[in-house]
Each structure stands twice: as C-alpha cells, then as structure tokens.
Image (cartoon, rainbow, N blue to C red):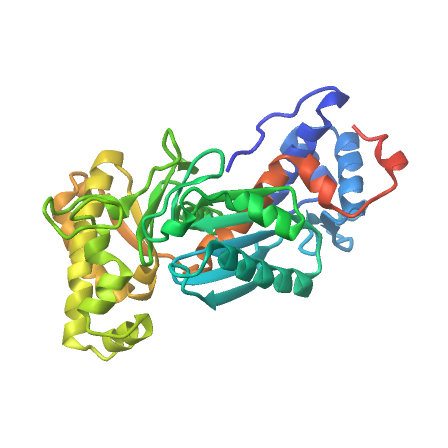
Length: 400
C-alpha cells in the first residue's frame, strides 16, 4: 500500500490532494484542522476537499465534540455506507464472494462448495456472478469495481497463465467475462495467495510489514510482502511455494514436475493420508487426536517446513503467516513446521521464521480481492468520485 507523502501546489493537483486527505483518514479519523496539520495543506483547501467528499457520501462527519473553549471540532472518517469493492474467489472446490467498504470492513460474504475441476468455465462464471449479484443486492451501495482471486499464475494483462489445479482456467481472462456479466468496468485479477497476504497486511498493519503468507488449499501458494508491498516478481508469478521441489524423484505433480511440496502438504494429500473422506472429517479426526490423522498432519508440517526454509533462506523474511487449511490445523501442524525451520533457516537465531496464524480464515482472499479495488479507489480518487453519489458540480468546482 502506498500513500502520497507531500502536498502539491496549484489547482491542477486536486486529485493528489484528495488522495493525501484520504490517506490520512485511512490511518485515523480527524477534524479539518487536524487534517490540515497532518497533510501540510491549507485549512481552506482541506475544507473544500472535505465538503465535497462529505456531500458525495465518501466521508462521514460526526456530531461536534466540545473539548474546551472555541468552536467544537467535528471528526471526519471514511463513510462505511459509501462505495464498496466486491471480491470474487474462484478456487478449486468452492466459490466465494465478499464486499468490503471504504473502512476496510467486510460487510457481507457468500461461500458455495463447487467442483470447479469438472464444471465448464461458463458455469463457474455464471455461479460466481449469481452469488455476487445476490450479495450486491443485499448491500445496496455503489460499486467501485471487482477483484477476482484465482489459484493460478496471472500475468500483467489479467490472463491466467498456469493453473495446475484448475486447468480449465488456463488461458482465460476472467476480468473480461465478469466485467460484462456484472456491468462494471473495473475488474482486477490476482493470485489468491497474494490477495490473502494483502488482506492480512491491511487488517493488521502493526503486526509486521515483512512476511510470507502461506495459503493452504488444494494447492499451496505464498504471498510475499516486503516493506509493506506485495512482491510479485518480474512476470507476476512469485510465491509458487507449492511447486518448490522437496524430493527430486517424488510423486508427479499437476504442474508437470515431480516431488513438489503440494504433493506432500496439499489438502487432497492430507485428507487421503489421514484416511478421511473430506476436510471436515480431517479436522474432526485431528480434534479427537486420531493417530493416523495427527501423523498425516505432522508429515505435512515437516514437508511445509522444508519448502518454506528454502524460501526464507533466499528472502530473509522474519515471519510466516499460515492461512487457509493451515490456519485451521495450526496447533497440530506448527510443531513439525517450526522444528524444520529452526534447523534449516540460516537466520533462525535472529528470530527469522516466526510462525503465526492468520485470523482471517476462509475470507482472506475475498477480503484481499475486494480490498484491492478499495485501495486503488482511495489512491486514485477519480475512480472513487465516479462511483459516488452525484453532487452539485457547480459548488464542487470551486475547490482546490
């Protein structure tokens, strides 16, 4: 997430100044006077910008709070009833949709079990759109755009380049299909682990700006965050942790390789090794301390530790955040994982490899997808203003 750092002069930079004010209000609410101090803008400029944002339902202004002599201050904050971002997740065995408001709060969520490995792509899109439309109708607020999370490598043009666990998506451009179906112009597509990492960063910015977020589903992905920014690599394919090789002559993988981490720590392998019919059965077996299930999870944790140690040794990051399946099995999988990290990660004596559990659960990728849209709108206010409620343009045009 990036914020403007200096006020700019002259009226041609109104959008810059709007972004500056919005960035400060993302950090914390404040009065007009406080915003002028924090941004370096004049009080008159701040007042003009704020008045138009309040009129358009982007900012909410609290009742005056008297704190002594003089005119009482009115605190301003981003309005949760303003424009929203929609997130859609297309994963291997489910579809999900969620809405995030300008404050970053998840306002609604839908989850649908789905066999996307066998469904035609047209059906996947149709089910996702129907779920999203139902959610949007319930919320009833202006839509900024749509973020789409997929378990795949996505290039800069929004094309799914590789999807070993969902090959029907390979070569697809989900943004084009969903934009037409939902009648929206702004649709962004990103890897689901990357979006889970962003969601975690935005939800807990004080918890750390350098970490690897590990998404455990049918596949295993990683979102790498360095200095508060998502690291995507040159082509956007960074973080393919599931295809790190941990055994050269291991079992074949859907990516075409052999011995990939996914074949030792992915959901399908875990459930099968534990002798359970599905994920719910695995969780129940672990909860009742079933020996076979616990052994399966322990082996997966050790394999995950081997794969992660290579990543941490290359990137020198201090923290691992476990999401998805791994967050649900956190207590059972962590001992074997941390044991491997402590012996294999070269910087472990400097506290590298600290393992934490994601608090976002199954909503992480959807939160990140919707949040991606909100984040872009707040840093590019013209997008935000276009989606907001109309106001009297004559009065608004007089501002700086």
